[in-house]
Image (cartoon, rainbow, N blue to C red):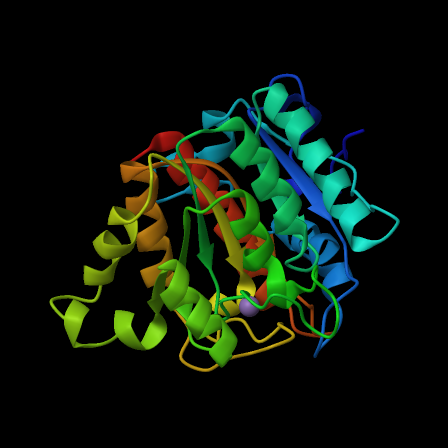
Length: 298
Ligand SMILES: [Mn+2]
């Protein structure tokens, strides 16, 4: 049911990684089926878990061993849903829902972005006042892609079917159909060019409040690794220039955690590059930081 050290997230000892006491449950979902360009997201979760063993457990910013703020962090055995995409998404929804029922904050590690449909659905069913915030280079609002409605290029179109409160930030690649959809449905999309433009030029963090102000009280957060700049995060299937850096992102996440309640989140689309270790380490550290922000709230 759960992974033991050294295979679990952070290689935490057993007394800090049991499911009973831990308020955070990490669910690896090495699912890859629809990825269009670069491949390799199926090995994303394993590489992040492996790299997490190198993350420093003390956090200088929060002045805490973050895992002690949460009663520990449990890592579940990887979920490898079989069947077609619809069946897989439903299986992820069910698993995440089971963990929410146990009062866990669930962290899904993909795998491709399709997995977010299942977890965002579980959270949307559980919380009334919930926004889904997507940090991504792509808006993923195509009705279908290459004949598949469950393609990673259609994730947010599927989410929109059960939750209209979607907010996107960092977007810098989309097709006309998606731009039209955003205008018609008045989706709150914050484009990268705009976040970096004159409107938010007061200081480098001025865009944070604009994004946060568009969110409901509860937030489910889905992070596609390609939100980051390819210089920092080259291990993605569809790299886009002009992405975001480490400090501006974690500063945003800290402010977001203080202003809204992040109830669960996922990290998707990491495709490890053989011989390159920093992308998976960055993601492992991002997960740990974010857990720290959520449980210290401020
Ligand atoms: Mn993307």
